Image 1 (tube, helix red, strand yellow):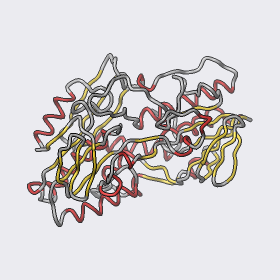
Image 2: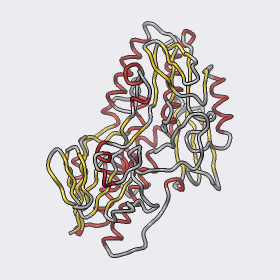
Image 3: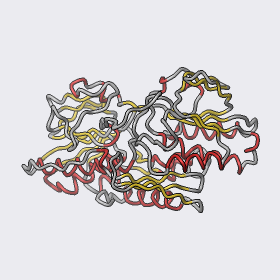
Image 4: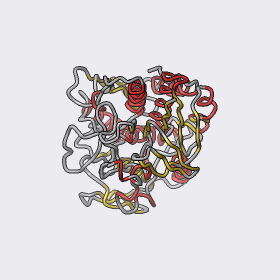
Length: 400
């Protein structure tokens, strides 16, 4: 029996573990190690601060479905790996593997600038989303300017855009919009770059949204410092702020950086080929955010990264699973698809409105790319949330 250990149980890790077991059946033992017992649908965290969702609405316990599908689940924190002896070290003991899948997700680099951790809110975790909700309740008592955006080196601009438009709608619902100057700041070269070198008509559409909703914006800026009542930009402009929400950069997790033999990049991501196999260890694979994705473009004045969203993470999990099964069966023809060649499928929420981003590949060149606004309701965003939670809760990892 072949034993595969999967580190991380979010989009990429859950998919990889379930697919390896589904395809490998009784010939394959799969162990998923994750420090959280819950699966969380991270894209919907943008709604938690505004009360549209509770954490319980977008999460469920992983153990039951993994057990039902034959995957062993260990709730533990993976500390490091020795790829030379094929040993994973955790705070609950050691595990040996024939194949290792690293799907660890990101670590947030809060120290990207002074004051970001202390004075800016972050909505990318359940705790951060709930703290943001509490802060907004206090904000209503004394409304003033708001700064929302992304710092230098950030890659998750999409979620910040979504929160921006949701906040604008929330301000109107609270009847305090006229009391608030709303600012958007981004390291992007232009509005709608998204870290993918833009989409057709994307900049024009985003500019029209900013004008329509009376949102002030700054592009090609980073954050020099955040203080309790202001944000100082890298161009030395000072923006007053009673509430600040920023998306900092992502870096590799401690498990990777604690394992120097993995030869990770300086930012803690894993070098892999288009088959997601480690170049130095043929039994080590990476999926999802843990994968190093070289930029196909050069940022302008301020550095920023590319997004690592749920759909490519899910797809890389499937590719890794298929390749591990092929290797186990003695095949050498591995499936390959570079991250940037995975189709771009994204739904950007805009406060009960939405924009669909569809393209034949995430990065250029693309044979087809389009942005479709829906100003009536964000039903596609809601439908995708319900579908993905249903799919994952039932262990139907093979579905799109």
